[in-house]
Structures are given as structure tokens and as C-alpha cells.
Image (cartoon, rainbow, N blue to C red):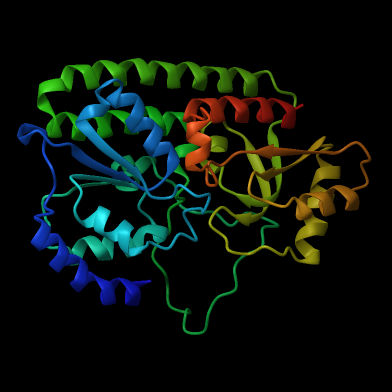
Amino acid sequence: MKKIISLILCVIFVCAAVAGCTGVKVDNGEKISVVVTIFPQYDWVRRIIGEKTDKFELTLLLDNGVDLHSYRATADDIIKITSCDILIYVGGESDKWLEDLLSKNENKSINAINLLEALGDKAVEEELKEGMQGEEEEEGEDEEEEAEYDEHIWLSLKNAAYLCPVICDALCKADADNKEVYKQNTDKYVKELNALDEKYKEAVDNASVKTLLFGDRFPFRYMTSDYGLDYYAAFIGCSAESEASFETIAFLSNKADELSLKSICKIESSDGKIAETIKSTAKSTDLSVITFDSMQSTTANDVKNGVTYLSVMEKNLQALKSALK
């Protein structure tokens, strides 16, 4: 990815200079350019902006169902990133290429918001749980690595309620004339996020089961941490693995029996083969497979069809209630 960026940056920066692409401003009658990487950020910004859509040009980079971990920027994407006014991205290992791009960009007026950094000590490190299949290490990776933080910060309503005011501040600075509108919209939205958070807490408090078992990647660590749930899974949330070992399948099948679980979980982009294998291997005959939506496959068409961050989290609440029976 870095080689591709290096090859096209010179051309892009020359084009940007000729076109005067140093960011567009409201005070000269043009729109503020806001680029976000993934759907949850996109929807948060839409709610904060509200009816002031004429003030902004909002771009969602990952709009075709490709998730954060396998995304590859196009030349057009890079032009949008390097010439925008506000950039909102997750941060973490998957966005290292983006930070490299920003460091080489001559446009230093971009307000780049790294959401993992904004979370501060609320961010949690990736965790290799008992029974979880680790990724194979490449040769030369023996030295101690830096801590990697779980990037799936949007799957916590508490995080969303914390980060939306951070995004609001950036929008208010860019369009001070309408800052009270953005603050009011943010306050209203945060109340909705907190109300749904309370529903999650109530569902967990009333549940007879306090453990989730995922026959899949597990991007929901923030969610389980928020409500004191335990979990087991085949892979960490950012894993590139797709085939589970016999040992992993056996461990998860035995754990389902040991805990008398009624459900095996998976995420929306999975083919469900691992979950089905665990289900068929377990002694229990009444296991069901439940799908959680990690919002890593949400497309522009989904947005057009009315999908919102809150609607997906409502759907995940129903999945959680089913999985904790």
C-alpha cells in the first residue's frame, strides 16, 4: 500500500496545487469537505449536521462493502483525503497507511481526527482469549511489538456518545455561524445513544446467560466490556484468518456444551461455516446461529435504503437478547 501511495502522491499533489485544492470554506460560498472512512462515522456526522447539508460535502470512503481491514484506497480517494478540510478515521493498525499519507501531504490545514487517539484510555488492546486461534507470525517478528488497540470502537454506544461531541467540535470550528445548531443536534443524538445504551444494560441485567460464543472473528469486545459480558471466539476482530483449526472448533464446541449455551454467533459478512461446524460438533441439539452486524459491510445502497447507526445497534440488541437466553 505504501509503494502505491508513493508512486501516485507526486501526481496528486501537483494536480492539487494547480487546482488550488487546499480545502473549501463556507465563507467563500463553497462547501466544507468532510471525509470519513467508515459508515458509523458517516452517520454520526449526518446526525450532527442535520439540515445543514448544504454547508458540507460529506464523503464515505468505504461505501461498497469492503471492510476496514482489507480496504485499498484509489487515486480518487487519495485526492479527496489530501484536499479535504476535515478527515475522520478510526486509527490503529488498519489506518497506518492513512497516517503515512497525511505525513507526506503538503496540505497541513486538514483537521484530522484519529478516533482511537480521541478515546484515550477508553481504548482497549486486542486480546487473545483462551481457545482463540492466533495469526501466524511472519519470519523476523520475534522482537517485542507495540500494543495493538482494538479498532472496532464504534460497536460501543458509550464510545459513540463520547466521540460525537469530539466530531461536533471540529464541525463547529469549520462553520462557526451554525455551531449552536450542531451542538443542539449532538446533544439530542447523544441522548438517543444513551437511551439505547440503557436498553442494552437492562437486557444484560435480565439475561440468564452472560457469555457470547462467536464461531467467527470477534469485533464486539467494546460491547462486551461495556456490559460485563464474557466471550469466546475463533479469532480476534482484526484477524485475516478464515479457516479454523480442529483444536479451535473442538474448544468452542466443548465450551458451548460446558456453558449450556443455546446460540453460536457470527458476523454479517461471514459465510457461517465455522459457526455451523461448531453447532454440528457440539453435543447440544438445539443450538441456533445468530448474526450480529459489525457495520463493516454497510454500503452506500444500505444508507440510501435508510440504514442508520442506531438502526443497526437496535438490531444487534435483538441479536444480543436472543444470544443471552
